[in-house]
Image (cartoon, rainbow, N blue to C red; front, side):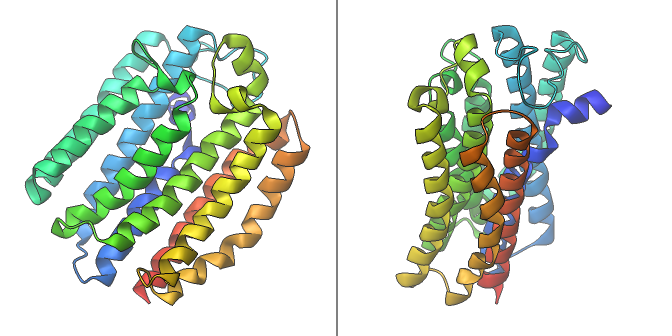
Length: 289
């Protein structure tokens, strides 16, 4: 069980949870929130994300991206904790659970949810697998921004009353940028081993320093998106409660800009994920107020 928990990459799961929290809070502010829809949507989001993490663990091991020189947390397949066949079964189970939850959401919200589910699973499997694994060609951040930001946040809001109002899109941009920043932090940490393995992440393509500034821009952009939404009247002024989380940006930013290897860079991913979850909670409270 500990190997499966390790492969699920718990530190990254706030990316999926945060978007559902924000989308649901927006529904609550509009008076259409329902607990059963929240629970099923959250379950589906977490199942999909764990399925993505399982697929990445398997693909990176098969492609030689996870080696003994890698800085990050232990990977299950690469270290032999789980066999490739076990991981494949795990992938099927997680996406199967997501599909079961999706059936309920399709019944509740219609064919749009079916389209979202099918495209999300195809995109997840193609991230590091398939003929063109786009996560290996600098497109990982685009995938995360779209699916863990736009699709997850707006899709969650859509579930409640089959609408996708402007406040959901603005909030989704913030969620997508923070989720993508988590991936940038991960890829800056792995930049040397990824380059050696031929894994051309955006950090490898840009280089360490530009990738660091990209991380800073994504984090800053999340706050800017909320401020912009408030300025044009799409979100209430209370949404600016998100600025309370600004102190949480200091430690990961300082570490990412000063460290090049070792355990400190592992912590950046965790603190960025924690930042997104706190940011989402504050945004949720703000819109509900």
